[in-house]
Image (cartoon, rainbow, N blue to C red; front, side, top):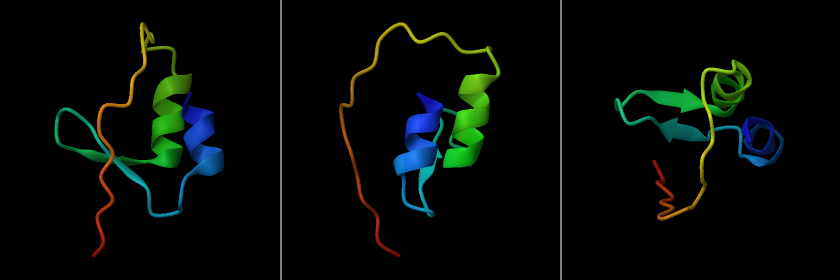
Length: 52
């Protein structure tokens, strides 16, 4: 899953984790590749595009 965002996201993509800490696509891929996470289901419930 992490490699999808690394290959398809915009360079400024940030995920906001439940802790409130942001992570970029490269960090997201590393988090998924670590083996510490197990995906049980996946559903996009909301997508927000913020322009600064």
